Length: 115
Length: 111
Image 1 (cartoon, one colour):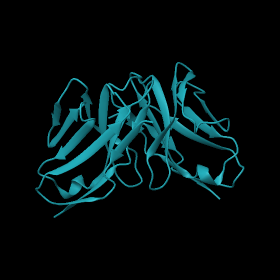
Image 2 (cartoon, chains in turn yellow, cyan; image 1 turned 60 degrees about the vertical axis):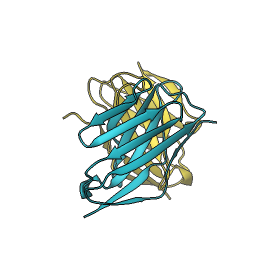
Image 3 (cartoon, chains in turn orange, brown; image 1 turned 90 degrees about the vertical axis):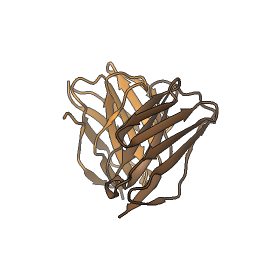
Image 4 (cartoon, chains in turn red, blue; image 1 turned 90 degrees about the horizontal axis):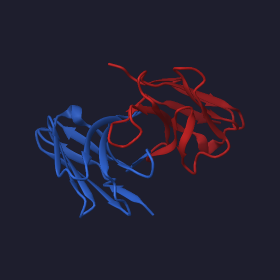
């Protein structure tokens, strides 16, 4: 069964460093998302992406964040200068249609630890 | 502001019994409501989707109801098994195509 994959599974970085989290969505999906989950808290929407551009972003997704689909398969989230509060699980998701009438498929997540 | 509330207390239940979870929302008029399962350290896994014009949806031992008047969804796991132990998340369509999640309810099924 197709699945969303994410790398790395765990990333440790120093405050102020740049990190890139990588995702490979399901191949026939057209809509891509990043969510984050701080330990013990809710899954929070960060950004949605369609047709090579951001379709929506939350207030969390400030100028320190960016997303890219550099080729036909990868979808990346970059944090330019990490802060301690960026420590969280980051989940990539994808679906066929961008509306909420179909499920989103989530990856296993990348645990980001900022020291 | 929009709010989604799920019972934050863990639900302990005996194997074979029915677990019932609640999702309440305010300041929303969602067309769709979804339920996901999340195991520790893993990503959410889709379980069921229900539309605003549907009162009830079933999938195997799972049942979801959606009452747009009460602004509430109930999620039932019948004949619960220890393997059903997980956190269950309610998610609503917000503006655009994003999902907004509740805080989840942890279910522990004891043998």
